Length: 176
Image (spheres, rainbow, N blue to C red):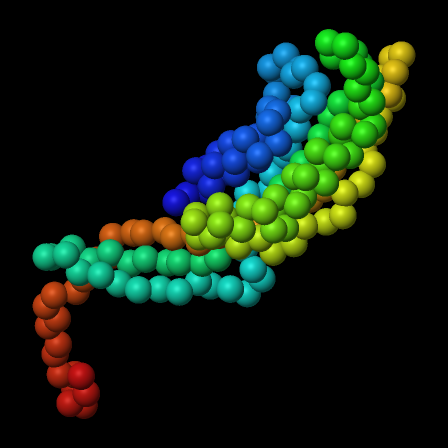
């Protein structure tokens, strides 16, 4: 599974777990109705000094060299809400954003274990939930967020040339 497939499944799974949209940050799409989650991602962070594991496979006359590594990836999630009336109840954006951020962090920490294991992904670290609120024109956008790091398998392949015949000649001093 490549990184984009992993990212899309994580976004979909988190959205289903929270019951609200999870959208990529800094997009041109109109802002979602609260509550919603936006995220940013650093998709490829190889371990320092790791060259990966190499293997070569033969298929007839074709040789393919594979390199496998396990880079990490960092997600930053921010849950957004505002104080508002919804039907006959009043929702405090502060409480809603904080609750959903803690629920999302818990999904990475524990609840989503089978989900991640089924994709071959390991959750390395989940930061504490922090206040990320910001002042809008006339009210405060209630925001709470956290960061999560995962590790996943990444594999690349390339066709390699094979030397089939070698002609050697002895030199003047009988060396090969």
